[in-house]
Image (tube, rainbow, N blue to C red; front, side):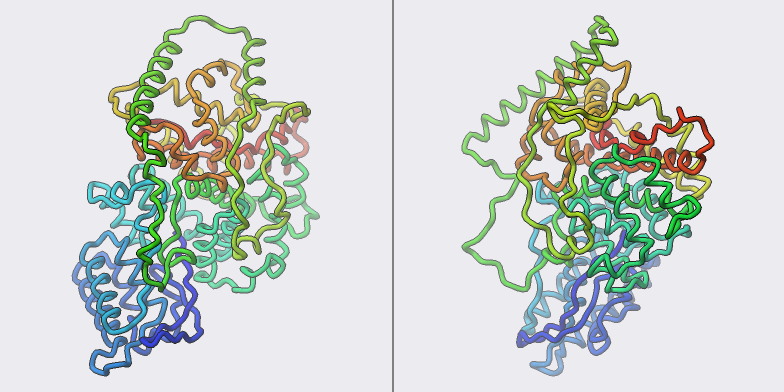
Length: 580
C-alpha cells in the first residue's frame, strides 16, 4: 500500500526545529530529508530491513542502530540530533513491525534518544482501531505470517493490514489486488493512480487514505503543488470529478452521456477505455476502502498527521476508551445482548422453515416499504482538514436517500438485469490484464468466507441473515431481487444494525463508536470487522457495472433496450456484511 507522509522537521536536543521535508515512505524512503545523511540512518539501511535474507536484515538493523547512535552523538555530549522522519520511522517500527527483533531495537533506540535529551514522539493511539481493543489486533498468532509478508513486501504494516489480518484469506487477496492497481504495469502513470485514489478518498473525508495516497503520489514522482489544489492538476484528471462524486454518493444519477464525454471521439480531454476502466476501479476501491477505515474506527498511522505528538502525556487527561461501558449497567447490557442473539437465531430458523409464498405484487410492496423507511444516521462530523478539502470539488454534494418519502424516485433496477460474468469480467480482463481475474478471486474468497458461527454459537447456518443484509443494502440503492421477500429484512435486522449498515453504505464518514457498539453487542469484534472487510466487493460490483455502462456508451449502435445506464453503477455496499 502507499506510504504515509510526515512533514520533515529536524528535532534537536534543545527543542529547536529547522524546516525541511520528509516522509516515512516504506521501502523506497525516497522522500527522507537531506538531514538524514548527517547522522541518521541511511536510506539503504531502512530498505534492507525488508530483505528476505535474515543475515542481510540483521546487518541492516545494525547499520540502522549505528546511524541513530552517530546522530545522537554519544561521544559528543550535547550534540544529539535526529531528524523528524527518522524518529517517526522508529516510532512506527516500534509499534507495528511484526519482526520482534526490529520492533524491540526500534523501541530501544527511541529510549536511548530520549535519555540523550532528544524530544521523542509518541503515538496518540495504543492500537490500530479506536473501536477494537488493541490486544485483539496486535496478538501473536497464525496471522503473523501474512503481516511479516506484508512488511517484507511493502516496508510497513499499516492499520488497514493489521485489522484486516483478522481474516488472512481476504487480506491476502486484497493486497494482491491493491498491488496490481497501484504498482504493476497499466495504462495510467503510477503517480496518477495515487492521485485518483486520493481524490476518491477525499469525497468521504477520509484523511487516513488521503495522506496515504498523497505520500504514494509524491513517492512516484508527482508534483507537490497538485496536492494543494485540484486547479494545479492536469485537466484530464480534473475531468473525473463529476464521475467521482456520482460514484461516491449517488451512482444512480450516472448516465451514458457522462461516459461518452470522457471516452468517445471528440471528447476533450479524451480517456481511452483502458484508462477509464483503470480509473474507475481505483475510485471504487478507494470509496469502498473508506467504509472499512471509518467502519472499523481506524486510528491515524503513528507517522500520519494526527497520529503522533512530541508532547508528554498529561496524567490528568486519559480519554475514555470507546470500548468501555458508558453506563454502570454494563452487566445487564451483556445479558440483553445474549438474549438478542438467541431471538435472532430463532427468527432465522423460523424463516428457513417458512413455506408460505408471497405474490409478486406483495413482494414489490414490501420492497417499496423497506426502501422508503426512514433510518436516522449519526450527526455529521466537523469540517475535515485542508489536506482533504483541497481535493474535493462541490463539497455540498453528498448522499441523498434513493427514495425519500413523498418524493418521486428513479425506477428501481432488477438485480437480474446485470451479470458480472456476462458483462464485466471479460471486458476488465481485456483492458486491464489479470484485473478481472483478481476481482473475481476477491469475490470468490468473500463468497466462501464462512465461519458458521454467531457470537457464542458454533455450527450455525447464517445464510438467511447474510442474504437479508445483502439485499437490504442493495435496497438502499434501489436494487431489487424479484425472488426475495423483503419482509425478512425487518424480521432479522434490528434498527441499530440498520443504522450501522446505512451509515457504512451511504456516508461512512459519519460512523461513530456509538454506532459501531450499538448493534450486535454480543458478537466478536472479528465478526464486525468481517462485515467491513467485505465492503471491497462494493468496488468489485461498482467497477463491473460501470464497465458494462462504458461498453454500451461506446457502442451506440446496440439496441436501445441494452442502454440501462442510469442503474448500472450502484455501489452494491451489501458486500461488507457478507458471509460469517
